[in-house]
Image (cartoon, rainbow, N blue to C red; front, side, top):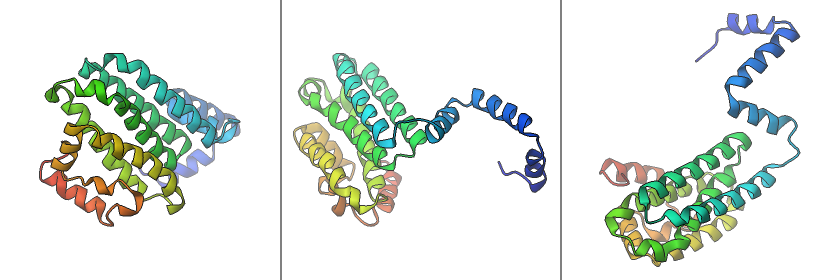
Length: 208
């Protein structure tokens, strides 16, 4: 929604007390905005501190969820909730590095349970594997937008991920069947036109 100059001027003419009341009313209705302002204005923790905390949360919650791996529908619902927490962290802190690293950590921690996943029927894990592939693709797209100074750290996550994918026959095959070359799992080997390539792959009905 765009605001007219007259509307902005009217808001500017509010007294300080009126503005305060308005702000607190809005914050009550928007918890995310409230958390974001708190972080930006008075939170003693830095973005790095928040990311460290999120790393612990991701690992702990996946470990707790692992007992439900045989119930793939429920397990995937928990994974999505963890992903939503990562998204909230990014919105509050604008942590662009964390948006990549935390999602790759999530995938890597899930694939710590490759042996358990391998005992399940492929049609039971298909949705989870497709979710992992799409998460990986998004991480690669975001990596291309990061400053190259971050690439070495991101490559540690990508190297670990590639190794775990190669240990999982059905997952690695599904990556290839969806047009994703595992050689791209290195920051400087992500194709320059990767975003266009992904659009083309999706237009052909893959990654869905």
